[in-house]
Amino acid sequence: MAKTKQETAGFSSAEAAFNAIDKKLWTPGSGCSGALDYMEQSSWLLFLRYLDAREHERQLDASMTGNTYTPALPKKLRWSTWAYPVKSDGTFDYDRALKGDTLIQFIQHELFPGLRRLKEETTETDSIQYRIGAIFEQLNCRFTDGYLLREVIQLMQPLKFQTETDRHEMSVAYEKRLGEMGNAGRDGGQYYTPRPLIRVMIRLLDPQIGEKFDDGACGSGGFLCEAYRYMREKARNDPKAYEILQHKTFTGGEVKPLAYVTAQMNCILHGLESPNITFGDTLANKIADFTDRDRVHVIGANPPFGAGANKLNQQNFTVTTSETALMFMEYFMAKLKKGGRAAIIIKNTFLSNTDAASVAVRRMLLAKCQLKWVLDLPQKVFTAGVHTVVLFFTKDGPTTLPIHYYQLDLKGVSLGKTRPLRETDLAEFEALVKKSGFPADGGLKASECPSHWQVDPKTVDEETVDLTVKNPNMEEVKLPSAAECREEIKAALAEIAAVIEGW
Image (cartoon, rainbow, N blue to C red; front, side):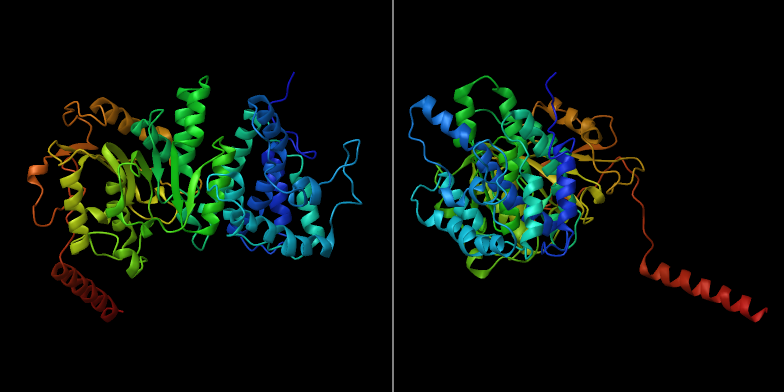
């Protein structure tokens, strides 16, 4: 019987092999100090191993289609030359393999510089050589111990990428590490959006073959990967559709080097081998210059927030602000084609902030788009504890139909690392949205479900454009006023004083 799991260097699965690699990366000499560093160093090695494993298949494809075969890398830079050379009988050639200081010197002075030059040596920005060069522009080898690196290479060599089953298993193992990176300190959380949430968002957006899908703040590529998987299932036996998905469907952008690299690798492992992800600041694009050719049918995204936008980028937008999430909201609205649809994760304070920029962007949203649904998520859906909402809208405004709200109530379940969000948690919400016919509106009335209600856009205050989540089906807990708190404190102190006097 054929095995469905990879047997890797004595390990029962790719997951076990990854665990062994992580253990090695804990060792002094790897240059790694945490999950983010592990991800970076294992990703560039995995990427080069993948290129080498797929080279034979690329050669066969070229011969079958009558195209000229061009190796992805010059011979000296190939994994099979410097990392894992073999003898004529196919066994590992230990004598020819680089080791120790010689290995580190080769990587620092020949491998990385050579890979980076590939971007300069090609004019075809959609070629694999250009993409390799762009990726390695953002990377550095942290290893200082060449013998330790040799051990990591030996563990990575047996990983398999040839079949869809192989790549699926690899993608599952890789996604697990992305989740761990999201739980890590520093800025790891910004790269990872819970996949159950993304999958539900993608199913509701329902992207079709021939439509363009974009995520201008793609992080580790979760929206691109899940959208590709969803669309691929629709046309599994259609070669023409496969080519459209590979080359004419997905675009993205990412400004952080580590996220850019992990997004590329994550897409590749999910089967999307030519993701058109641009490294750079998406907000540097001037939205006034967009033509219909630049626009897309579907957007799914979780943009970063914070006052991090530079002055130059602020000039690209009509609303003046340094808050990146607000700039991305305007970008998404400009990026959508007429009739296009989007699902955007954003901090819940976007709905209520009273600053001029927030009010202006909300007003723009209601004027240009039909805001269909607001999904209010529990605070601990994200490991950082940020309270977020998901906005579902279509670019065929202004908003005239009732805005549906849904407040996800997990009834006492505490989300966290040991109990993350599950797709089943969102089943009721997904059913309600599908019943309403998103992106069309089937006139769904407020249901008896206490988590669901509607807001007539005519009742939204024209001055504040306040869209705050206020569930009319839940009793509002009235907090005591400051004066009441002071009186309670005084009374408590008096009781304590009386007890002390009685001693």
